[in-house]
Length: 192
Image (cartoon, rainbow, N blue to C red):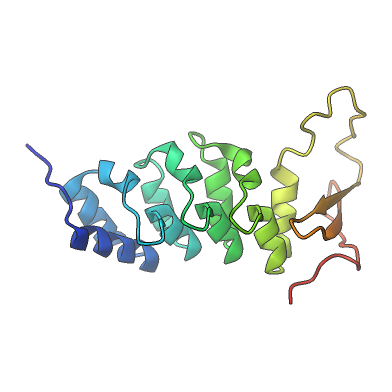
C-alpha cells in the first residue's frame, strides 16, 4: 500500500491541529500519510509540529508525536532561531519543557543551551517572562559543570548558590538546596 503525499492544505491543517491540540486530527493525519512528513512540515516562519504543540502546552499531543518524529526535530530552529523548548519556556509550560529535555532519544539538557536570534536560551526566555519555576528547573538539570574538571565538588545535601548571566548581562542569583529551597537575589532582572 502506497502512502500519499500531503498537500499544502493538509500540512496547514496539521499545523493548526497541533496549535490547538486536536489530537484526533493529528491521529488522522498520521493514519493517512504516515509519520515521516511530520519531520519536514513547517509554517511560513519555520515552525514545526513540535513548536506548535509545545508553545501551546498540549502535553497529550507532544506525548503522541515524540515517538513518531526524528529526535533531530527537538533541536529544530524556526526563523527566529527558537526551538520548541524556547516556545515552551516563553509560555511557561513546565510539563512540556520537562518532556522535551527528558526524551530519551533527544539531545537532553543540551537543548537548554540553544540560543535564538535574540541571543536567549530557553532559560533566558523563562527569566525574561518571569517564569521562576521553569528557570529553577532548568538550572537544576542543566550542565553547569562543563569544563570544571578538577574543581571542588559539592555535597548533594548542601545548599548551593548559583549565578546565571543572561544575554543582556543581567545576573540572577539562586540558591538550590536539598529540599528545593531557593531564593532569588533582589538585584536580579525582573520582567518589564
